Image (cartoon, rainbow, N blue to C red; front, side, top):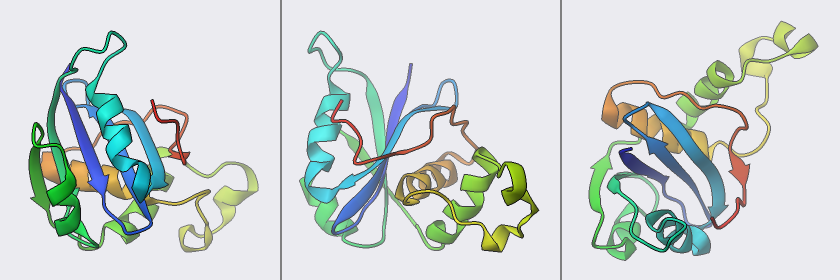
Length: 150
């Protein structure tokens, strides 16, 4: 398993994603307060036995407060900074690709549909997919808001 972390950086909240790129699958995605990001990264870097898990890289968008985040990230991670221009708008479209509208909501034009929750985790997915130059699949459930620390 080759794991990669993607971070959509923000001042108050961040989108954080853990993916297995050998199977092109999202393992976890969440929107969490910025103050919890480093703790979540550390949790992902350890497995259940407390040994270091294999995280190959961390991909971070170059937008809001990216430079500050880059200085705080664990030095053991290989960090790749990518252009995140337009990812928020593309995240909305990607959300509906992953979780199509159901029932009467599918009759609404896509521009009128409002995704449930914040899109920061989906923006992190878009950032990672741009870096990898391929789409990933995200099995249900969708992203967690203020997700668990493990």
